[in-house]
Image (cartoon, rainbow, N blue to C red):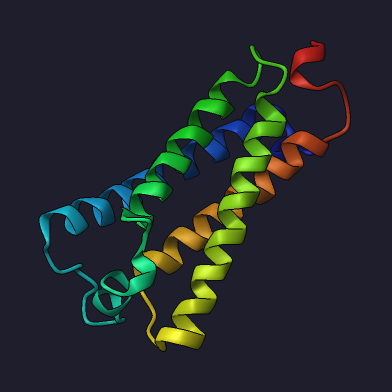
Length: 147
């Protein structure tokens, strides 16, 4: 089994990704509630995206949903050896986040015609976490709760 396939390394990648994702989402949540412009370095249209009708779901900022998802993912990754349902729940949350992020990326490109660099960064992070979570759940050998 390759070294990167080891459960500990997969979990480390997932937790690391969740931390970075939480920082990105936390920043976007903070600027949303502070009613401040999003810093994008002039490279993209973050403000257009983050002030659009798609930036909230029933009054809740999408960035806050992302923050909660990343914190949940990190917690589930750390609890995987203690709770038999943690690995499948981790994959479910990550996959749902990746699907929703894919939808939002489509909205950026096709509907808003604006790209938010922070949002694309989050999409890459959640997709990477989903790949790692898939490898964790579907790896050969016993699952965490069988050991």
